[in-house]
Length: 84
Image (cartoon, rainbow, N blue to C red):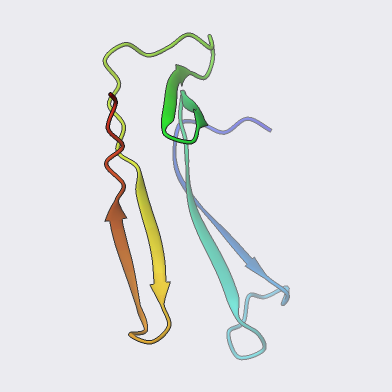
């Protein structure tokens, strides 16, 4: 299956009619694009998905998302990997 470039939502339900009265629904937002990446811990390689060649000038930000059960809140942290 081939999707056009863009942003999509995948919605899942155990109920055929997706009724919230019968069961919860779940969703996930995802992007279809021509960019891919490979990483080895703090080293990231940004690639053209079609050719596999590196994308020159690409910049990367890595974020960690955590849920704090005591505060009942989601926290984002920029990991700021430094090259050196």
